[in-house]
Length: 536
Image (cartoon, rainbow, N blue to C red):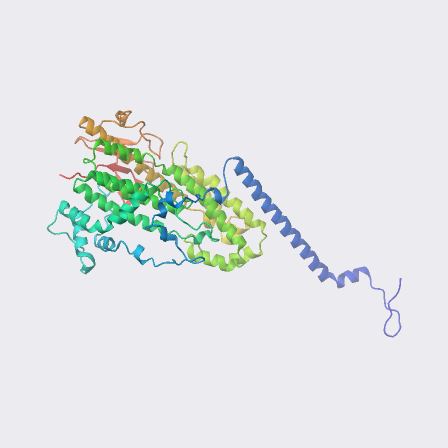
């Protein structure tokens, strides 16, 4: 072996292999660390992508789609689309890439100024008369006074009706609402179109940023039509009122195909508005009118609609958000922005952006799988569409399991690939309870129509619901909470009470419960449909 020479010509000692390794140990350590890191990232990317692919294949084999395109309603030709009537189409006329309208929208959003001014003077009434969905009859005299006062009323005291009865008030209300007649007629004509597909920008990169300006507007239109229908009933114009209720029920379904959970929650609140004049008309509706209302109500299935909404939420919103995070070059800012806009987000999320930036790509695939698994294992089974049953005990058990699944700090959940499950999953008890409460409203209102038809035919109400079949209803709907018959009792005075045992799953004898503010407590007491006072 050749020996090294020192500067003085003396032979230098031979460097041993161990000394050589020791000299270069840091470099070798760095190379090893890099190699291990590359292998780790490669393995985790492969593992995550493979797990997600296998899960999607299994879901597909079960007939479950995880593709957003399968939930987004297809485009509809303008001439067939209710949402493209001139009164509604501008709602989605945004400047490309912004949240600003490309036209002056003050005319559209200010078009209900007269109604809005009157509504501010009529204090909302939360206490119903025995009924879980329907308030006491609309105070048309007060509404008439509110329209007369308009924007000039500045008193701090609540507005009071003077020297006016309901018929006079109804006349004043209809006169005030006459300015909206062309607009409402346009909506009525458009409601004859076969489809409704609002121009929601589903293609936006951030699913959480998709704007839904139509939801608030449609609900306002329902409130306006509800008032007009009540006024028409007070004047005996039942056919006009029936047409207005039909328009309201159409508006309830105008956003039915939307793959967005909030759209369906708003639909439910719109349905309650339609039930008010329907109930106020009992004792005035003719048999054919009652039959038409009953047939229309029987078309609603909020249990099935809510389940599909959850499936869409899992895919369009859940997977969509995770994919948006994957594409984002600045995950720190992205999660900080998400926290500002998401009421479910808690704690500081921006540090999670650092972890997301440093994490293997495959971990986001595992997040997608686990988020979908949570829907599949806990949320969706809570709504039994086949038997049309939503059992609160099952919902509570599922929610407890979900809470265990998503407990812990954001960092801990992230390391277990459950960070987005904890961030994005909706409240199961909230959506399940809302679906059950609303379907019960539909079922009891349907039976109310059948009972009124029986009363018209026999001069009295039946002593049991079974006597409605088959002449007045093909099949009596069951209690969505228990799967057993709804509770029905004919009182000694000849009036009836109809109810579900409600979310507490206990028969409280047809008694509902109120919270401290006087509003219905949906978690306690029975869900009751009882007759509201009829005009003398």
